[in-house]
Length: 597
Image (cartoon, rainbow, N blue to C red; front, side, top):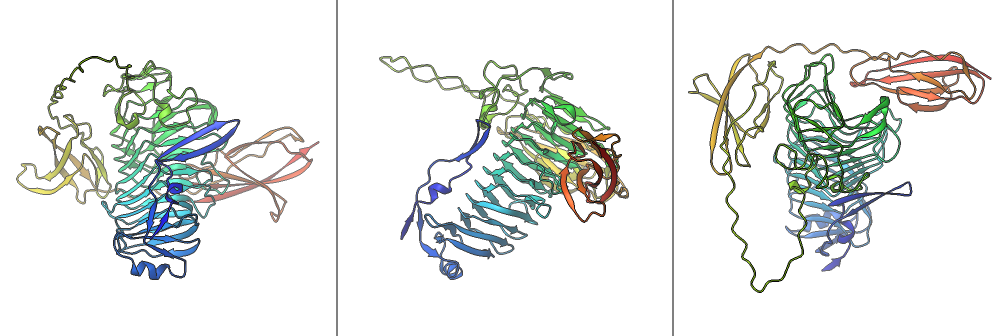
């Protein structure tokens, strides 16, 4: 057998620290040292297939340097790792029948995991292209742990990680640099995005809408304990759901950026919970605003959001508009304009004014907001879900140790099943059933039964305190939530609501590039190019190209719907604005204007 000590070099992203010194950004990843990997077999690109065929359960195949192409997977419980000092690269394509194996420490990764694949772990590996997980069922146990997805850009790679399948966990990983989306959520099956770092992901001019995390029709995700940070100039969006979502749990995240004013944007949301997040106040952000806001909104063609719960957060402020509402909003610490149940305050972080780690954004024991959350903890993030530790005093030796008294049992909290029936339900459109506000001794288990009015017939039973469900028939629905807490207390709440016929989808609104060329432009004097009057479906992205008259030569390309630019020569300028709306429609408007000396 061959002993490989490369495993220690592969241990990344259990903890990610961002250090800012002398104007440079240094990213360090560290984890506890791992034991040396035992290589039961070794392989080169030419022998890899035969070594996999010969391997038995529990064995590790160590790869020499080289390109291993696209691996189609296996159903053997084996580990594929790099040999000590080697730099193997590999793409993947896994599907039904692939299960039970681990990939550890490879490079050049990308590819796809599709329906039927299960119980696969990819860890400590470097991705240089998109990875997609699609069609996998809940419970598939697809885990990406401690990987890097850095400096990925381009219109052909709109996202680094497409999460379009269930049973998926993305954790302890680093998404840094480049303009492609970090994680795009495109499934209603549960996806966990936990303890990752998203650093300096900004627009790269390719026309892609750059989001660190974007819900792309997805719902029921857990977004927990992530650090979203920006230390360089550029346009970025952080956590955005612009086409409707619901049933998400967004908690214990830190957002510290200097561009996008809104840290969490939920459009047409139904039943998501936003709690214990720390959204840092920064001045000088886009649109002459401050950063660190929460927005609940909708597109004009979509339903208003409802049943969203927002509590125990640190935020700059709230924007709740266009009919969207929050069913719960309390115990949030804001900079100004606190609503009933919230309060005004400025946090003091354990890591100072500019913390460099996720844990550094935890409140000091004397900060405003300490121990003022609804659960008795601090508002903002909870590191490891625990309150701020009390320093242990220096022990005073005694002749006879004093026995530690047995702590009293926890106070019993009576079980209380709480949920709000959805309004405006329509056939074929998922609605949120949210029992997460129920009370009792945690953890609480929830069971939903779909019954007739008398309860004599049960049509369906589902579990989980937060569900998304689409009904197939119109009529009054009778739904009962039954809860059981950790010490066995139970309670039920049966309610009814109407489901109406489905409505036709709204007509597509074509993109329309609109701008007015500046007048009186002079050499060396800044003018404004404003494309914000352009219209289309949802958010618009703008690209400006500075060309000759027939467009055969492009001198410069810039992005952003509002630009300020000074020209260095006097003549006629030909400028083309290209806009793209949220569903991909595009339009251009090319105009000319004179620049005089």
